[in-house]
Amino acid sequence: MKQVVRVAAGQGFWGDDLDAPRRQVEGGPIDYLMLDYLAEVTMSILQKQKARDPALGYARDFIGAIESILPGIVGKGVKVVANAGGVNPRDCATAVKAVAEKCGARGKLRIGVVSGDDLLDQLDAVLRDGHALANMDTGEPLSTVRDKVLSANAYIGSEPIVEALAQDANVVITGRSTDTALTMAPLRYEFGWKSNAWDQLAAGIVAGHIIECGAQCSGGNCLYDWRSIPDLANVGYPLVEAKSDGSFVVTKHPKTGGRISVPTVTEQLVYEMGDPRSYITPDVIADFTTIGLSREAENRVRVSGIKGRPPTDKLKVSIAYQAGFKAVGTLVYAWPDALDKAQLGDKVLRARLDRLGLRFDRVLTEFVGANATHGRLAGDQHGAPEVQLRFGVRGPDRAAVERFTREIAPLVLNGPPSVTGFAGGRPKVEEIVAYWPALIDKAVVKTSVEVIQ
Amino acid sequence: MRVQLVDIAHARSGDKGDTANVGLIALRAEWYPLLAQTVTRDRVAEHFRGMIEGGVERYELPNLNALNFLLHGALDGGGTLSLKTDAQGKVYSTALLRMSIDVPDAEASRLGLPGSR
Image (cartoon, rainbow over all chains, first blue to last red; front, top):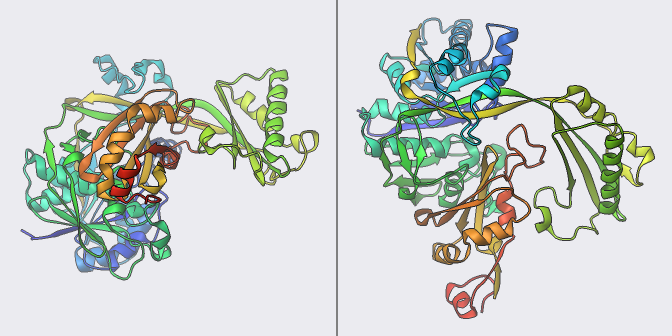
């Protein structure tokens, strides 16, 4: 057994730094590269791509990432775990295989494909069997939006990834795995943690939570002492060096920018946190009030003491559904009296929409530069040098939203004065794909693992 | 004396649906008890009155010198439904740091708070 296993994060979401995976593989020794591509609504985007072309539906950035790190996988034995499969892990694997062959690495990859999280095809059967898939936030049953559902995926845990690694895969591709399982599974596999080793499993989950957002734990988006954080242009993505007892060190490669300190790691730990005693995953419930952090050396934070307990018998399901249309238009008003002019612009626009008989579920006005992010807490901003009027509408009727988008530009000539900032043209109508979180009995979701070479 | 949270704490926020979370972290470990004592659920609910539609929950993490607040109904529906600039609640953290608390001068001095004598 290895004394220390190093898992590095190379992608915090789909759209993150394209070069980060390569820098993580080349910048120093690592055993595993973990790539997280999936946010809540990413699955629906991928489902739409698959509907247009059945060979798509995965994170295509991943193929470029594999090409850039192939020497590390083949030459140094770095293994890759990624949820890049989206709603089509099998075709993602085929594309990975093709790029490996193109680069002269035919037969060098053993690609583990994890499937079974995608519930879209069995959704009606699941509902018929009495699983309401009620919205966790509102309690409404899924039947209220069933005909608008675009994707439905269970968040699956570490077990199928461990199984793929046990079958000697050096690239593991999953669909909707939990972000944290991508880090915990390699540790569980390497150290042979049993399925009831609650404290170790919880530690692996916490390690995953710390690095799943990439550089957000190594100086990116860090408020603490932000001016002194060095060389963000070359920010080092994080990695964990874990031991079999579950303790680990968060660090980054030498000669990189950013910072790893107790404050930078703490900020990431509280990010998107709910009840800290119950961080629920398919494998274990981690207790964030037991996490101990200490500075070991510069850019090295030691994490220990984590406690876990058995999980529930449910899995979370991420469902995406069509929820109407929206558009947001903006104009900028300049001093003097910038805010007053923007407020009059808002009033005029509302009166015109009213006169047109347009009805929306929601109309929201913000005055950027005065109150958009801090509301009334920002205080009096009537002396602001400029204020952006930001006007949004949302509703089920595309035509009404479309009509709204034509009402912004006229304000430049027939509304309040000192107005500019309309060069972007008419606002775009966006189709809203909304997120419906639900729970399902674990027994309903059957995962499977296939290894292709 | 009055102390603004921005001088004694840092913070990060995120979202879960229509709920924003704000993790409030003491800049120094010895200042955490002051945060835990003064930044109550009711104070935070009052601070954000009119800005959020639901209630506030509060959790303590003494191990991280941090408090975690859940602000329900803070994101105009949240996620892709929201029309807000800050649809994911990324900067609610800084809005909480605007809050001021009253600290007896002697205690402020004992704790070495910024601006104390």
